[in-house]
Length: 138
Image 1 (cartoon, rainbow, N blue to C red):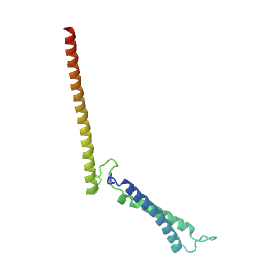
Image 2: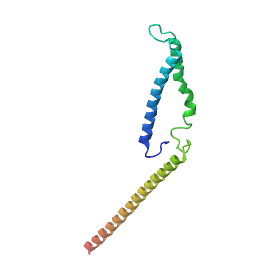
Image 3: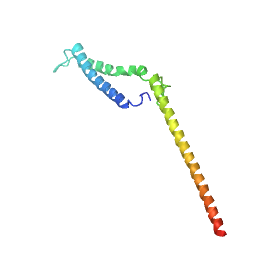
Image 4: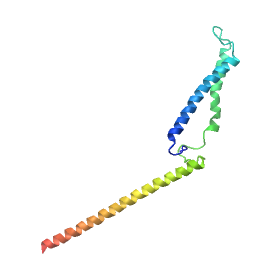
């Protein structure tokens, strides 16, 4: 609902690119922390291994603290406007909803009109049948 229409593929590519960037950044950051804070952590002694693993685990939990700031309030069933999306998204979503309503209304009208035409044609056929029956009786 928060993705503008017709750019879903681009948004997915952006999301996957950011995911890959985050994975690589985490890898390099972990290596930098290891080299800066634990320069003696090499085989066979592994001095400070337990403190490094504790620090690494704590840093992995750090993004959980950002969830309240990064995840929008609301439910997945809420509209984009209710979630506070920008004007460009909400305006295009409103236009799409109106287009769907117009198409539904037009298809309903067309089916009703088609039903009226069929009923009128059936009435005409009944009139023809009635006149044919009257001619046969005479």
